Image (cartoon, rainbow, N blue to C red; front, side, top):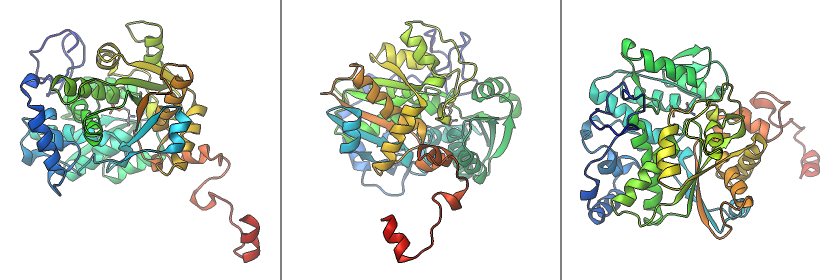
Length: 417
Ligand SMILES: N[C@@H](CCOP(=O)(O)O)C(=O)O
C-alpha cells in the first residue's frame, strides 16, 4: 500500500489502509517463481476446454490468486480475446507495427470480465452473496453477469447521467437491482466505501484489489500471444485507471519473475473532458485535482476522481516510465470510426487508445519506427447512441431508421449502387 505497510489483508473489505491509500495485493514469492516451468504449464493449458484454466485469466492463476480453491472459481472462460493487426489502423496511428488487443470480445463485452471473475470468485469464497458496484455500465454488466452465474444477488448504483442505455439494460437483464442515484461514479464510490459493510455488500469496483489482480491477465495473455516479447508501447484508455494500474503491475511482475526481458512503456489516454490524471502528470504535480464535472462522449471515461490514480502513478509513470495524453471527443469518434471500419469495432472509450497513439506519434513522443499495442476495452454494441453519433446519424432515432427505407425495386437499388 502507499504508506509501505504490508500487514493488512488486502483481500478483505474495507480496501483502504489507515493512511487512506488503496490496498494492493503483494505476491511475496515472485523471486521463487520458475518462469520456464510456468511457461510450459501456461502453454499446456491452451489446449484445455471447459475448465477454469482454459480461460485467459485463470490460465495464469499462479500469478493472480494462487490460494483460491479451484471449486470457488466463477468463470465464463473470459479472456482468450483476439489480437489483430490491421494495415489501415497501423498507418492511421503512424507506427511501424500495431496490434489491437480486443478485450471487447469478453463474455460481457468489456475488459472488466478479466477482473470481475476474480473479484466475484473471491467474494463468494469469503461468503458474500450480494455483490455491489457503482458504474458507468461496463463494471455493472460484468458484475451482474458473474453474480447471476454464481447464483448470487447484485446491486448497482447507477449514476444519474452519462451511462449508455445499452449498458444499463444489459446490467438489468442479468438480474441486477438497479438503484439510480444523483451524482456520478465518484459519488457512488464514496457512498459504497462508507456504507457497503452495513448493507452486507461486497464491492466489486476497482477499489477492490482483486479486480486489479484479475486485470493483470490482459498483460499476461498479450505477452503469451506474442511469445513473451512485447511491443515498445502499450496504449490504454484511462478512466478509473484500474486497467493502466493492473497492466503496469502485471508487466512489472512478469519482468521480476523473468517472463519478459524488458518492460514496455505504457501510454495512458484520457478524454479531454475527463482528464485529471493527465493534467496532473503534465504539470508534474503529485496530487490529483478532481474534475467536478467530467464530460466526454466516451461514457466509460466519465470519471472525475479516478480512485486508482496513486497506483497508476506508481506502476505506470514512476516504475515503467509511462506517459499520459488527452484527446478530444472528435478524435475519439474519428478513431472509433476507423476501428469499426477495420472490422474490429469498439465503444468510444476504447478508441481513445488509437486516437492517443496517433497524437503521441505526431507529437514525437512515440517514434514512427516503434511498435505498439492498443487495448480495446468495450464492444461496439455497448453504446449504440455513440455509433449513431460517429456515423453522423444524430437526427435519426430507433432501430428502424438507421438508414432511411427505399422502395425495393431493381431500378432504385441500381441507382444507389
Ligand atoms: N468505466 C467504468 C468505471 C470504472 O469502474 P471501476 O470498476 O474500475 O471502479 C465502469 O464501467 O463502470
